[in-house]
Length: 95
Image (tube, rainbow, N blue to C red; front, side):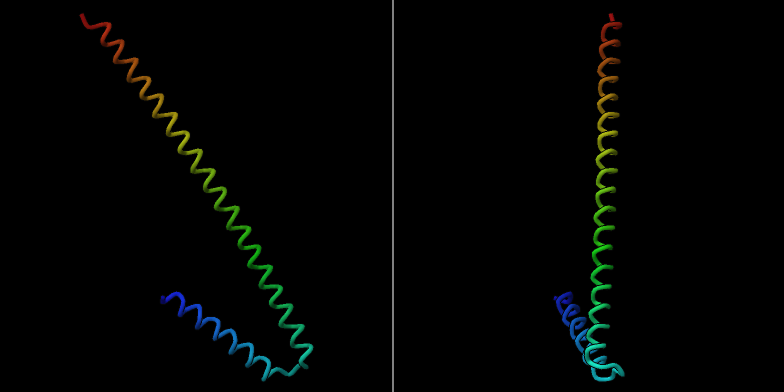
């Protein structure tokens, strides 16, 4: 619930900032709209790039994790096989 309030306060702050920017700007309405649209487009582009980078990072981390699990599974399998072989050898050597 606190997260929803934070989002609500953030949105209210954004709206207040846009309203204040519109009221106190020294440019015409069209110039201000163009400026705000360009800034919004830049922000959208930045967010998309960040999401793409995060996606690549998560994929790389998952692949490294899968490789590590496979490596440990192979080592465990080899250790079990070596233990079985040692047991069989010891069993055969015992009179």
